[in-house]
Structures are given as structure tokens and as C-alpha cells.
Image 1 (cartoon, rainbow, N blue to C red):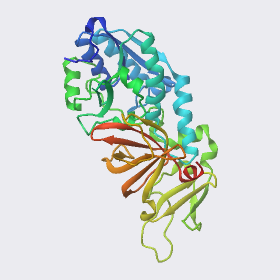
Image 2: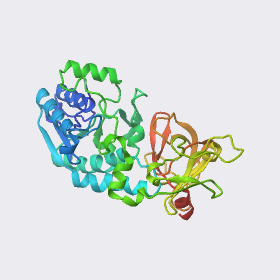
Image 3: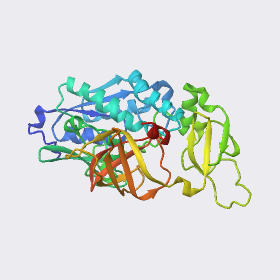
Image 4: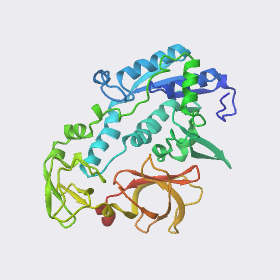
Amino acid sequence: MIDLGLNKDPADTRIVVAMSGGVDSSVTAALLKEAGYDTVGITLQLYDYGKAVERKGACCAGQDIHDARNVAEEIGIPHYVLDYESKFRESVIDDFVDAYTRGETPIPCVRCNQTVKFRDLLGTARDLGAEALATGHYVQRAVVDGRSRLQAAVDPTKDQSYFLFATTQEQLDFLRFPLGGLNKSKTREHAARFNLPVAEKPDSQDICFVPNGSYASVVTKFRPDAALPGDIVDLEGAVMGRHDGVVNYTIGQRRGLGIGGRSGDTDPLYVVRIDPDRNQVIVGPKQALAVQTIRLTAVNWLGTEKLDLTPRPVTVKIRNTMAPVPAAVAATRLGDVAVTFQEPQFGVSPGQACVFYEGDTVLGGGWILREEAAAAA
């Protein structure tokens, strides 16, 4: 039996569920309905879903809206589709495009959670008289000494805490994550038990608004200049070759550069920096990717003790797929936050997130600054 910790009879407790049309959010809604909660499903139309019907492996497409509606009908709950297309464009797609043109590698799923879902949809849930907004994320929420904490999921292979680092304390108080204590196989079992029409539906893999996984096609549609050709140079500025637009390259990339090494060199070359102002891709040996310290902006801190100039030992993730590594985090006199790794890290990408952990508890995180931006701060 699900206990959301609301101290009210479930029948008198309205819960809004963000239903994407996938198996996770569908099971979330079904479990809450089974537990007796007054459950309401909401699906967001985030972009032109008429075009999205042909997309497979992405969330919030036209087929997904249809699937969410069918699930709601199967379990017997009201279901609404809200048009958030303009909000999604402004808060997520425009930010995605702008970040790539700055030579960064954005994470639109974090922006979507931070803005459209946990700001706008959460407000809608309150307007509907809900006591909480529930999602199908694999992450846990715990209350310790009267304070909500964000914790990693029980199943480390499905943990999504990295993508939720920007969740504020106020939002966390209102959010619930019923699947955080389950693994995916158990979720699938529930889907079959409830006879959900999405029980065998595969997980979404792509960013919902990126056709065929081609980030460059989205960026160049809005910013054609991002596809202008330019020079690939080494760390000393020597021209090594030509690129077909900085948007096609990411930090740490080795394959597809189309250049050879210099005479006498045997080490492979990697993208170590992108300079959109000069329209250059800078390459170098692997050791040039090593980074000891990074600076972060727009940091969200969930710890109970204020972050100050004294370095605090934590573990951090600079990519969702990596295991947390030891580091120290501290505020700086310039108003941003510095993270110093115990061991140098490779392939640190500006625009990605650095998330802080204390054990399984998320302490917060921020956005990695480009070297040029950090130096100018």
C-alpha cells in the first residue's frame, strides 16, 4: 500500500499524476488509484504532436498522449491534456538551442523538470486542489527532522536523481515519487497486473523534440549560423582541418573529426574545447581533457547547512551515467560555486550539470561554466 505521508484519508486526498504515456507514469497513476486516492491524470502537449506521431522512443509525442488517455480510461480516472507548447518552446527548446550555439552541451530534460513540469504543472496541480503532484521518476523522497530530502532510487540502473537536482525545497515538499523504491521489472509486473495497454511499451530513449537523435538538425533549424564551417585547430592554434559547424562537436569527442595527427604524433586527438566566438573546434591529446576544478552557476542547494567558503566533502556526478566521485564544493567570493575533484576528471562539458551527493542524498547541483565564462565572472 502506498503511503504518501499526507496524514489524510486517501479518498479525501487529490493527487495529480504527470502522465507521459509511458509505463512508469501509468503505473504510478494505477498504484495511487488502487490505494484509494482521488487521482487525476494530466498529460502535457509540449510540441506539435501531429508531427510527433511518427516518432518512436520519445516522450510526450502524439502516440504517448493517446496512450495516456487509454491508461486513464482503463484504471478509471479523469484525464486532461494541457497545451504547454509555448511554455516548452520558451523554457526548454530555446534554451537548448542557445546553449549549443554557446559551445555548451545542454540537458533539456533537467530544464523541462525545472520549469515546465515542476513549476508550471505543479502550479496547475495546486489550482486543481491537489495535495501533491506525483511522477514516475525513479527517485526517492524522505522526510528527516521535518525537512524533505531528495534521495537516489533503490535501483541504481534506473536512478534519475541527477536530472532532478534543480528541484527546490518548496517543490520537493509537494512532489511524490511512488516508484523510487522499485526496480523496473517490478514496475512492469504492476503494469501487467493492472492490464495497462502500455505494459510492454519500451522506455523512451531520445530527447522528445529531437528527431532521429539529431541535435544539430534542431539547432540549425533555429540558428543556421551554428552550421557554418570553420577551422579545427590544435592547442597552439595550428590549423588541423575543417569542421562543418561547431554544433556537431562535443567535448571529449574522438571519432568523426576527419583529421590526422601531426608528424611524429601517435596519440589520438580529442575535442578539448569549442570556441563559438572564433568558430573553432580545439583538439588535443587525452591529457588535455583532464580537469581538476570547475565553476558552477545557478546552483540549487538542498543541504541543511549553508554552503560557504569552506570546502565541503561530497561526491559528485558530472554525467548521469557515471558513479559519483569524491570532490569538495565551496562557494566563492564571486558568488558562484567551485568544485574540486579528488582526482582529475576527463570530458567535462560546459552546460552539463554537476550534482552533489552525500551518500544517497542529493545536496543539490549546478551548471558547469565554460572556462571563458568562469574567468570573466
